[in-house]
Length: 217
Image (tube, helix red, strand yellow):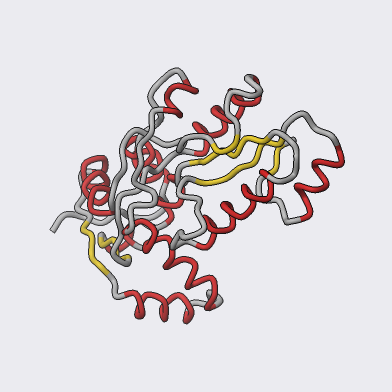
């Protein structure tokens, strides 16, 4: 049974259904003290699963690389990556994580409880991403730090509900605290190869992006 984000009643229902194992899509950095609400929620769900009496595996997925490329939308026009202060993140592709999920499903019982962090082989800050984006496009990208209060106000002004804006800022607070910095070999071992890196992700995303890219100078 594959459970992405089950509510509190789902683990009990899983136990009643009698599956051999529950496979839950969690996240690296899951913990009750995380700065990011989603990681606290994942930790709570893992704890419920521990008490449901059914063997389970929680896939501690790396932070999705697609999120990093979405943060660059405005930078494609301006050349400036303007975001709150961050920290290193082991950005990981959906495709690699899907392949790893298939490998775990095919090898039932390989992991009991939470897996090691399933991540790419390198953790990057947005300064690193700006440099990579410049290299893969031949155009200049810069990284600037936005004050958190002003950034939150901008999100709310754009129609983002205040509680979602606060959760969004939690991503950056968690990154600064090093919650997404671990680059673990577990994913490479599952894949039998090195995971796709951010250079390749950016090359693909920026090639397909519509409109004009920022120019030098």
